[in-house]
Amino acid sequence: MSIPRKDKGGGSNHDKGLVRFYETIYQSMLRHFDLDNLKVILLASPGFYAASLREHILAQATVQGLQNVLKARSKFLVVHCSTGHLHSLNEVLKGDEVKAKLADTKFARESRAVDEFYKMIGFDEERAYYGPKHVLRAVQAGAVGTLLISDALFRSASSAWCANCRSQNIGERRKWVDVVEEVKKGGGEVLIFSSIHESGKQLDQLTGVAAILKFPLPEIESEEEEEEGEQEPEGNA
Image (cartoon, rainbow, N blue to C red):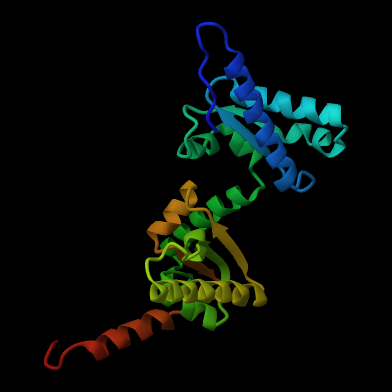
């Protein structure tokens, strides 16, 4: 939203714009947040805006008698960030206070899963695979214990420039939806990463999909080596 600047004659337009801004966020929160199940609600901004937003939310909830909002008072965490741009989200999430609050949340579980994946590569590489080809083979074998997948693989293909491109992209998206369902059906855990979080960016560097297996599958590497050998031209060593 655009908020008027403070003018020399007073800040009335600025103040009114700021209240509209807070109220828009508050109403959106009432529509979309499941306050009973959320563990923490981060309000982050430069300056005093986040703290003022919290005051507005609780004041409005008090006037309107919204007990579910008032009961969630302790879930609102006000933190500082250097800018209001999206990239500051990573800055916010790395703060000690926020890390403590997020210890048992989805974000923390994703970070631990990425760390676990890299450790697995180091000491038991036959239980850690990444890339569509290897992960799909592991899923087919029913071996996936934890599937790490980027939300980029599920994005709508509506922006594709031609009908054929859209059809191909939607087919790709459908494939990964089926993979997720297959892993869940086999008792595996599925973690869908946001591409704007640090852990999601790490996963995107690994092609956007990785898997920690319940048991080793050395045959995946063996099959790939055999396929590569078959594709070599005759006469090559």
